[in-house]
Image (tube, rainbow, N blue to C red; front, side, top):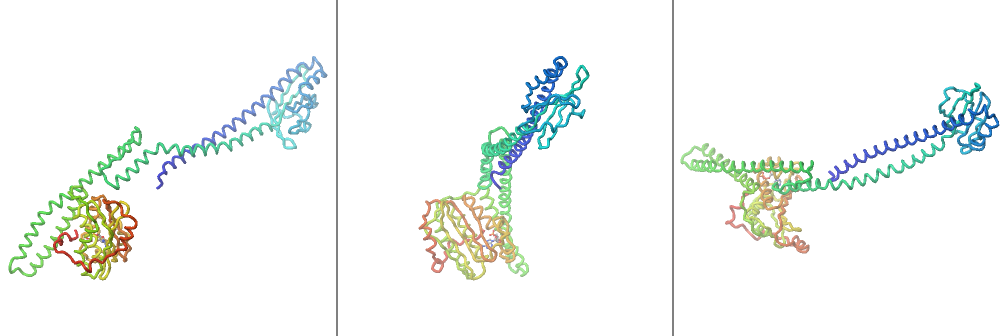
Length: 502
Ligand code: ADP
């Protein structure tokens, strides 16, 4: 999902609305200008016709034809073209101005006024050369009863010319305004959206790192402020629910420990009673086995709950991961040898982290125990410790059964066991990797896995590095100095207790 998608969507909506408004505005301007020009032209034609009647036809009887012609010639000379004027009496033309020149219109083409619907109004005509004319016809009855028709007309070419120019201007300016406004709007919107981006980034961190943090409250007094407050309240509720969950698991496992110890004690003393029938011994034996398994689960659950809930007191001291892994593997080599699995350790110079050595050791034990457990005889398990930038890295890779791609997202979940693991009756509880993850998180690190089914799995642990970065040359040496430790070093008995997978 794009970070700007809201911005883009709002901007697209805004650009669409603006485009619509500009189109409506352009059409309105075009129609308005056309109506205004047409009405002005009509008014000027009717005014001219009325002034011809009042100035020249009304006094015609008194002043005579020659006065009329002289006056008309002077006001509307035969050579003049705009507006053209024609005065007819019956079918006789009493006066006609010259042909129109630009554009040329031959006035003698025009039919004499005969249609009564033309009287006192404008009608339009198209000449043989395609010129469109507007003509106003004004009938006049003289005192002696003669009927005159005064026609004033003009071409509508000037109006069309103005409208063409206006269309060109609108066609150029509308897209330019639209583009400028869209880009301007896009950049202007980044400011009001900034708090949303900050909120999103912070929300991402709250989920990923820890729930203890809260979102910054955007004090704008609007929906954004309400949103940040609501999200913070939601995180409060989530944190409370999680804490409740952790408390419940911790309390339940704690409460189960005592009865389990008592049951185990009772069973152990029962099994030692003399002359018990064999089936009873078998029954007690298997009950003891299940009891031990249950005690292990309860212990693991309690560990996870404490680590997740922050209730676990960890002894944080500088730990050299190389030395710790080396010592741990020395004790696990027997496990590998039982299955003729080659256990290799690759390391370079010291990789120092701040942590609880017993807990980090547990991570190594759980991962290596799994690697051996899920690798068939004569396979290979390789453990690598190195550092990169500010991280200490621990890899445990094997050539075993691998993890199906559908199971990969769940392997660190509590009680999760893939079908491949179940079918092999490995006796696991599905809590080992959950503990690994909880320990890594408690140390500010992370655990991840890559695997191809049937080709082995590779677990990667990242912990914050305490010592300064190793250089590139050091890293090169790390991988060059592979050591096969276990041909020469054997296990020490003193550490055996801490080497059990939980
Ligand atoms: P379990 O006690 O069942 O081993 P874990 O939490 O240690 O529980 O592991 C969870 C599941 O992850 C296992 O049941 C198994 O399906 C899978 N798994 C863990 N490590 C490996 C490995 N090295 N190779 C293949 N599958 C593994």
